[in-house]
Image 1 (cartoon, rainbow, N blue to C red):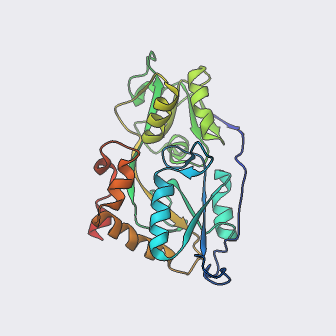
Image 2: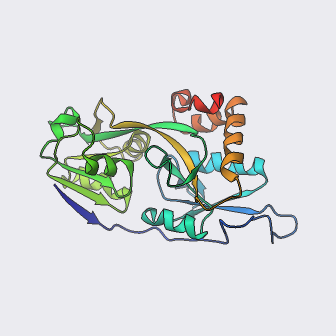
Length: 269
């Protein structure tokens, strides 16, 4: 199997102010909330720009409300997703929040508890002969680099995943869809919610395989060197937002049946 790294269009980085090693409450201007700088990338329905160029989406709305309750202003900065760990460890951003899977990365960051769960799935063109994961043998698959699907296909630890002909690891996740539509790839793998959003937005005729690659918990990642305890504070807000119905209402503004995506652990912990 060959792994081909293809560099797409990199969204501009508009990093402002954050420093993961110290409290952002220090040095704030009078009458304004201190800012938390969140590193993310364009990934509907979690984070994207509305008609006015303003960040919106599930993660944006959740972050805005949760950090407001903590006494902060959430500021989203579009980053190169491949550089996320370096950016948070260096303090250029305070946390990573962008449909980010906890599973398999538990020791790399300080994590909040999961606020949603999400299926990572494989999608093909509607007329494709691929009906199951086993049918991917000898096929070309496109994923975004440094994501859970890339890890699954390169690790060879899942017995359900056969040897593929080529794995295209794309820096820009928006290139997944033209790769599939134009026939450069036979299948793509990503979050089901993101694929369905793109199918609706651009009237794409794809088919999602019934068997998911994996179901993961989505969380917010802070640097291992960040000792402010923000991940614990944020986790408490997630518990409260689920109890008072805020989390379900926010998710429900973007996805049908929002209760399907809620994490039971939020209430139990």
